[in-house]
Length: 113
Image (spheres, rainbow, N blue to C red):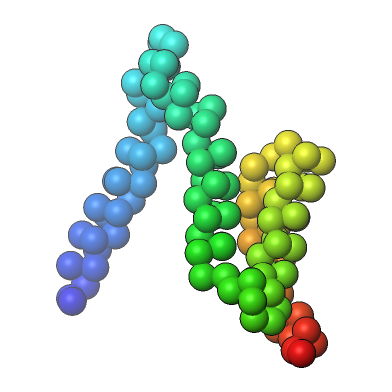
């Protein structure tokens, strides 16, 4: 790619980003948002957490060490954090971080029988 193509690509990406951010203000500034938008805003976080839990558990073998403990600890973190803070972002991101630390560092590797 030459410099002109790169500049055009950056301009297009900037325009799309701006329009995505401005969309709600342009279309819903003077009136109440449609019921579908309110519904999605209300229930989307629950859907995201459900999808993350299902994805987390899809390949778990409860018969081999560490017997799904990494995943169960992460799910426990989701529940506790959400009950304490009532913030979906905190629940999702902290629990994902805990899960990744457990998996990447093999912290439950001592459960070999």
